[in-house]
Length: 296
Image (cartoon, rainbow, N blue to C red; front, side):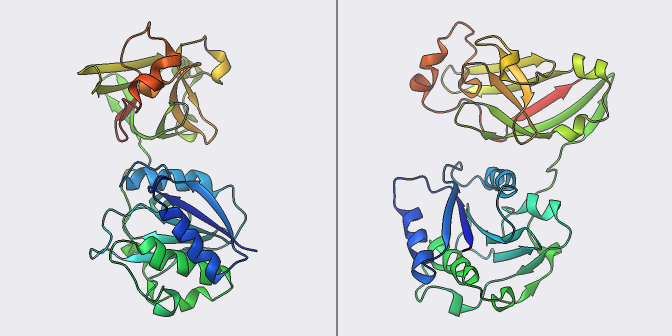
């Protein structure tokens, strides 16, 4: 039994995910389908890349990962399949969605799935997820050779985002690490692309004295909000209720969190009842891509 995972920006109200699952299980009823997330911000390819990267580590070798965050569907962008030895196969658009995968693994084979025997009979101009990615994944899950998918591509030709990992800079007397917000989780935690390993060379004094800030425009209050913390906590329990803290999350990326609250829904009102914040504002105030800055 082969695991096939799905990561999309489809949401859950329209039936698109169900269609993809139906296509896969029609071709291979034994495929085990696992949802990673369908709540990627619409058309936010970089967030999709980040979520897939963090999740793929937790699946058995040779799992198949289908990812669909595809604002360029039916344009001249390619469809690709990546095979990573002892890790798995990744299928989706060639638009940067596999940037972290390509950056992490040195030995990757890439093919363009042009073999129409692996597609649905009729391919929609707007739903490659159902008509190409899903059936390709299904055929591979049945044991079809990866080489039959289509022609080999040079991994260097695959679209990949730059600056995936921010680097320390000396700006005047300060050491600065400027990342960006790549994910807001269900708990309102503001998760950056700054990894724990980027702090390995810091002294204890530098760790204690560093400051983290995220500054953004709140559409709710029509003004700028600055969230700022000092130092890094070990866990959520190290902070007091309603305190804004910085810590490394479960995937070792730096995040801002509000203890028993929702940091991403913050509108700059420290007396606000956190229990009502998500109900009142409905969507995070912090946008994906907002600068996430560490200073020493």
